[in-house]
Amino acid sequence: MAEITASLVKELREKTSAGMMDCKKALTENNGDIEAAADWLRTKGLSKAAKKSDRVAAEGLVAVASNGTTAVAVEVNAETDFVARNDLFQALARNAAQAGLNNDSIEGVQAAISDEITNLIANIGENMVARRFARHTVSQGVVASYVHNAIAPGLGRIAVLVAVESAGDADALNEMGRKIAMHVAATQPLSLSTEDLDPEAVERERAILTEKAREEGKPEAMLAKIVEGQVAKFQREVVLLKQPFVMNPDQTVEQLIEETAKTLGTPVKVTAFTRLALGEGVEKKVDDFAAEVASMMGQG
Image (cartoon, rainbow, N blue to C red):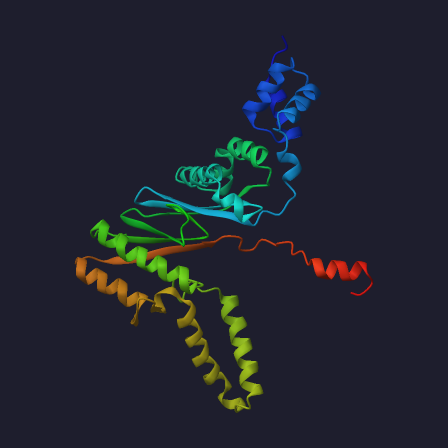
């Protein structure tokens, strides 16, 4: 009986993209013969993953997990929306989020679910990938989470995390944090504070507003003052703390936090937030059947 070494298992895994335990079993069943083991995996349908890896995976789920002072959101993609309703895929997304509580990078999450995701690709027949990861931790307080239009607890297409530092009552802090997370899901702020706003985004907006003011015939001597006022308005629109709170537009998010601090009798500070929306940044292939037919017929 040939010795099944770690290097043999690694070689077979790289060749087939099958799970580690499946590779070890295949080698054991085939006396360490790489080619025979690869064929064995194919007959079992366990090497399909390699053939799926170049397909665009832009559907799937965003999953959240929390232990109170730490919360994570992980985007797990598949090729079709149908897969998001599959129990096994939902379990994979939940496991990815749980893995995120013990890892500080997407690579750590990917490694933790590597075998599970490879086996599921073989089982379902679609490419899948854990693509993005967000993790927030507070020393004291809560990290609140919200999943928009959840299809199951902690699973949906948009997830938001809000980190709240405070010594106040955890339930009250979580309630406020969840409301702010719902606000973030709806308004998509670009930054937490004015200081955090990307300078390039501000300069781009300033350039656009300056050119627009010129086209409207505003006096050149007044342009700087006019534009700075509009830039300030832009910042209020895209900075979380300065935005009118969606549940009470008469107060800003910053004022909501101050009001909560006053009620709890202790300082409250939102230190970070993340909004993950499914498929953001993925280039999706758009099939235009009519255009393709017209082209084939010499009409396009």
